[in-house]
Image 1: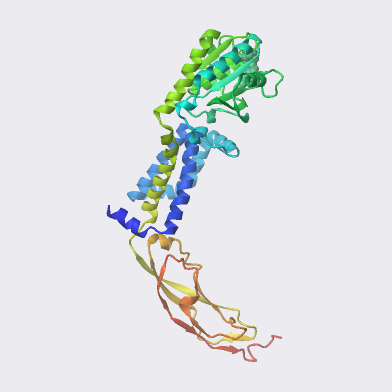
Image 2: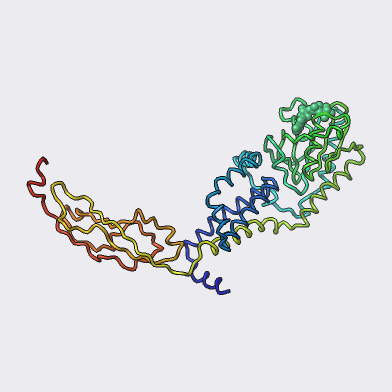
Amino acid sequence: MKIVRDAWQTFSLTDLLDVAIIGVLLCLILFWLRDRASRSLGVVVTTIAMIFLLARWLDLYLVTMVFHYGSVAILLALVIVFQQDIRHGFERLTSWTWSPGLWRSDAPGDRQSFGLAEILAEAVCQMADHRVGALIVLPGRQPLERHLRGGVDVDAKASQPLLLSIFHPKSPGHDGAIIIERERISRLGVHLPLTQQAAKLSEGGTRHAAAVGLAEVSDATILVVSEERGTISVAKDGELQRVEAESLVPLLIRSLQGAESANMARPSWFRRVSVPVLSVAGALLLWLMFAFETEMIQRTLVVPVEFRNLRDGWEIEEPKPTYAEVTLSGTESAFALLDATTATVSLDTEREGGRLRNYWRTEAHLKNIPESLEIESVLPEVVSVTIRRKSNNDSAGQP
Ligand SMILES: Nc1ncnc2c1ncn2[C@@H]1O[C@H](COP(=O)(O)OP(=O)(O)OP(=O)(O)O)[C@@H](O)[C@H]1O
């Protein structure tokens, strides 16, 4: 409780900005892991992050050193092992639209499973009658993004004429699958993963292999119309099943309502706020662990004194001060922002209308000291030098 009270009392606007930036980054990473990357990548990244945080929290020397010196190797190993996931993630990033489930309402009333089932059944039967091949994906609860390749974003309300137009053999978009989410065709011409188990296909070819392939790796329902045989099949849970026209509507309603009830099990508000809340909590935790400190440290630096803009033919009489002793105080994290090699006392010898200056308050001319550090003392407090013309002997050879 005390730590929370102390943190609250010292929490500044800069800390707020710090937490906000890390929160947004965490949010993006979590959304990406949830919607775009594979589960195993998510598990590995989360485990590594937890080990790292635990090591810092408990001051585990060896683990911290491994992370410190091996971070590049760890990153490289992750990139090599998960190169496919990362590549697909970046491919999709350029056309990133937020996952529809995130911002749109998932309320049961929004879904009109029955109407969509009827539209789909009628369109599919008509295509089967005319021997028009079709591949239609109805996503379930799991994100499909990582299994899909290519395609064109559409976002059009699903209707019978539109479905028939898309799969018309002369339509440029008839190749591949379409994705229907919440009564809307979200993408067409999509490539699905193919199954390796030819035995499941009986007499089907690659269109059927694609349907089974996606059904093996997700909970989607995939409708296939065979161009060659005019049959209708449904791929679900890795299995392909022929269906007759009359059993299509109830089967589709079950599938669509299954996806809906899965969404109902996890209310939409929860889905929407869970990642942002987790991100803010994570950013605050990171701030508490790494940035929040109450212990004040005092350090003394020896800082070089530099004279700038000394006119030609003039010099500073010896002995001139070359160093100042600067005592600073602040937290460890405030000192982490200090680069002691750039700290200087910088004195401009020709500042005021060309008049030579020879007296300065040292502290006022300290450069590159972070504002988060308190300047306790500067010695000498004043730098006073004599600037004189070089004697003839010294300036011999000069014009
Ligand atoms: N990986 C894939 N993802 C999506 N669609 C695919 C994929 N591979 C092939 N297709 C679709 O399948 C069509 C080819 O079907 P093919 O005749 O080889 O298979 P099939 O299962 O025998 O289908 P049909 O019974 O309709 O002839 C392609 O024109 C394309 O539209």
